[in-house]
Image 1 (tube, rainbow, N blue to C red):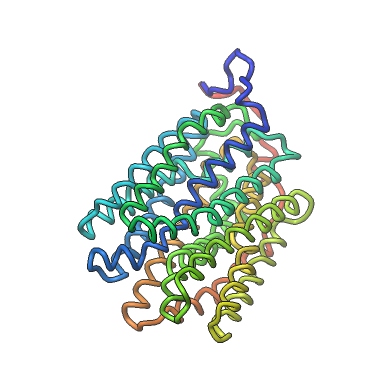
Image 2: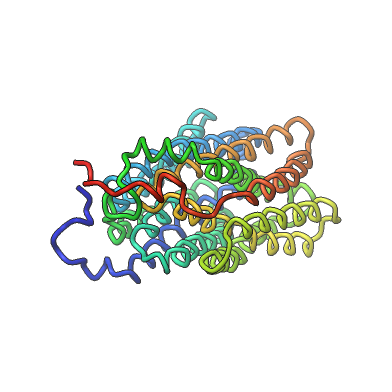
Length: 414
């Protein structure tokens, strides 16, 4: 039985405003912290005497484990409530980041930065927060709340990128990791506000999890959404990990590289919040097509123009507007098609595609640099993939899937 069925009235810390605030803070910490990992590529690799490809593979494993664990974490949250999942995920996340500092071999780094942090992100990231808000907020505020959580994650990038760089400069990379891990310890405390919202209390027909998943993967628009979100993961993970070393290779000051990540996060606050608002008023699939088309243009200009601080910061601002603005629109489309009963699970499968793209973006970036001494092949691959994603989202049917709009609602399963 879900926590939301309890007889007691909600406590003050479960009021809608507190729920949104707590969810936003969790997203800010968990997403913001991981976006600082790209700043550790050079100092950690140099400190251990490793090639960049080692750390790139660890982050690629992290993205893949995060994606593989997301449907399972979403299913547990759908069944038992999001608070418990977020609390456990946050604790594992903090442990993984702390142990990165003590990882003296490539295998140890793969297990800590890759596996442990990946598992922690599956349960403690903004993905579970978004699913929780989708269930706990009324339909007319749902897209706005999802946009707020995504924008908060973006603000976390703005906060943690310069903070991480200052920690590295002032205390060294190992101590910086321990200091960043301390922030993740707060997540289990904040997760208490998102308890509840287990299965049986949400919109949609009372299908079993297996029936809902089978129906979703038999729906063409869901498959298009899954395929398109792969591209978002490829872009975001590649840029987050490889933009700082790419810039320093081209003579850009490391502080400018750190601020470029921060600027992406700052402008993403505007982009994510705006996408959440616009997604509640207009066509989500058309907005998504436009975002991916704009990404193709921005990436192509960045590659073609001569490298300078002005170009770098202009790219960061433009890419920030387009960065995670896909998330409230994509998760919102899942809710439109299938309701919110299994939103954590079904968005989890979409996010798995995102993380497969992230794995390839991070890994191929490391491979391309190791083989050619340049990231250019992967930058151009990002342009082509953006055009593909724009085409994939356009024909999506933005309405309830047939099974979810016509199935009567029987007695809940026990």
